[in-house]
Image (cartoon, one colour):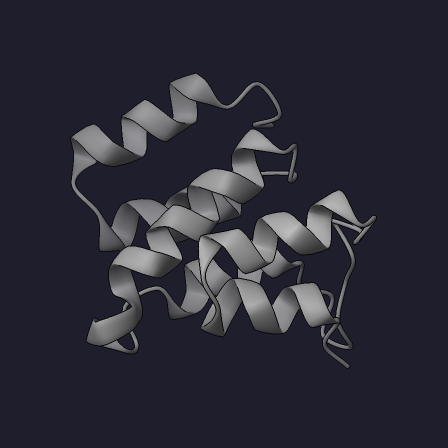
Length: 97
């Protein structure tokens, strides 16, 4: 199942994500389908317009704190954002593989 970080990254605010990380939440924990909190947020980033900006902030925070960002994550992110935004995060994130 989902960890608290999966749920907060998807439905919560940046400060809640930060709090869980500060208290030792595993940033790369996987759910039953093998998705990390970052995967889950990227997949659902535009499913709720009223949460889009908060989810983008959560993606940024997860990346800043060391979440693994794979090529497939980048492709999913790029599909939903401008090329400029996607390229910025690709170049910024040292963990991209």
